Image 1: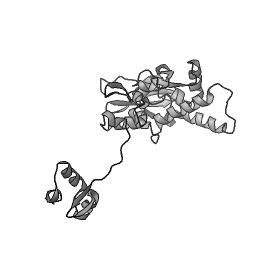
Image 2 (image 1 turned 135 degrees about the vertical axis):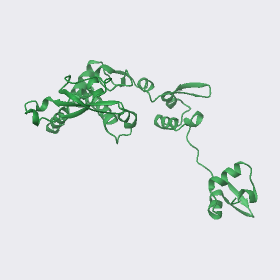
Image 3 (image 1 turned 30 degrees about the vertical axis):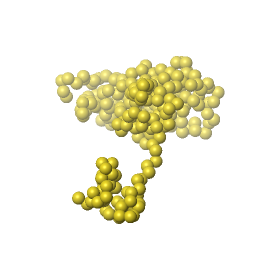
Image 4 (image 1 turned 90 degrees about the vertical axis):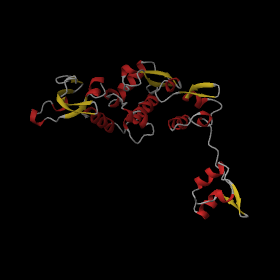
Length: 270
């Protein structure tokens, strides 16, 4: 083990006890751990799980996965019971919680590339237990119209790093939102998506920005392309048709036309 690596051996993190260094990869250190779920077993029969040091220290990982399995079992046992709709905001918070789990832990979810793929996760306390998330939300004054925001955008969703904010304010604070000047007006991408001049949704603006598109094209709908018509040797047809007939790239024809080429020079194979 490198001398510069902080030794976590012997430390306890939730149900996990670090028993030694496992390996390092791309600057990240991994540790061998025992979990309390099999603490009554003889040492030679206990399972060793490997966990990332960062997640042990920030509270994102606190078990071998047994807490998640126990929670799933509990949900399964109570699946036939009616939802507890008597609790205030129960359904709304359940939906918010589900969105957090998907964006951070489901690679097939549309927003995963902005969260889970960047190493942002939901702490085990919330991920394994919706009731813990619900109790935190109510204790921190959740009401309709609010959305969850991470105070430190580089850290996970966890009790000491989250707060409730009005919708729109939270998105303006995320690392996905950037100031953009169009004309004489400068505002965040989220603000542009709500601007009267904008013709597309926020996700489209964000995707266009990351493709390098800037200016008015960022917020306007794409106009349908109309192929140019050109007459050559008393025959009139579109560049696409000329391209197919003469076996010349349509891109080449359009570029030549923009440069002012005409007649034989336009349709030359040289």
